[in-house]
Length: 196
Ligand code: SF4
Image 1 (cartoon, rainbow, N blue to C red):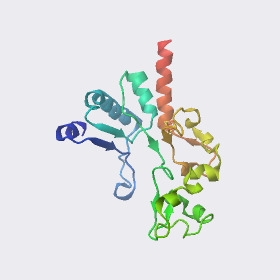
Image 2 (cartoon, rainbow, N blue to C red):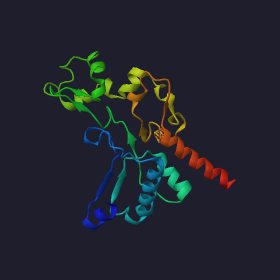
Image 3 (spheres, helix red, strand yellow):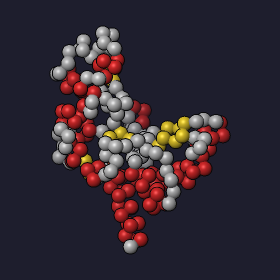
Image 4 (spheres, helix red, strand yellow):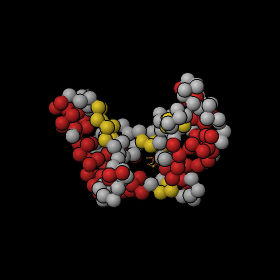
């Protein structure tokens, strides 16, 4: 795909995560961690050759992958910004014209705002977007320590910097584990041990 984009003069390639919903439901096509590592390695090998002509957005992985490529493969990897953009670079508009940070948040927003206050047929977009509920909606309702239960995110330099794991999964849960990131941390740690 990268070669095809370069050959045809495409300037930007977004690589998205496979989501097993809709027609993809019940199909076992999600990449295993080992398969993901292979894909990451292929992209990293090509990246330095094509980065000046093709902007690659590898949205199927999280920012830690960049560290893994540097430490374990000695290769650069395209910049990764991952996760939930609710209220920052993503919004949801329903069929009445009401604007929400995310479709999971409809009832919470409506407990604080009237439908008219957030309706795009009544108020301009940016007047609504500036309302407090769009400024990190999950922290407003779940508290600033909310992400502490996300592991290993709670010790990751990319949390709320380049990476915003979906907060919905953490609501009413004691702990959330991002398994693939744990694996990347472990691979990096193994390399550091070997270097000692
Ligand atoms: S550990 Fe968490 S914050 Fe860090 S890259 Fe992975 S998902 Fe993002």
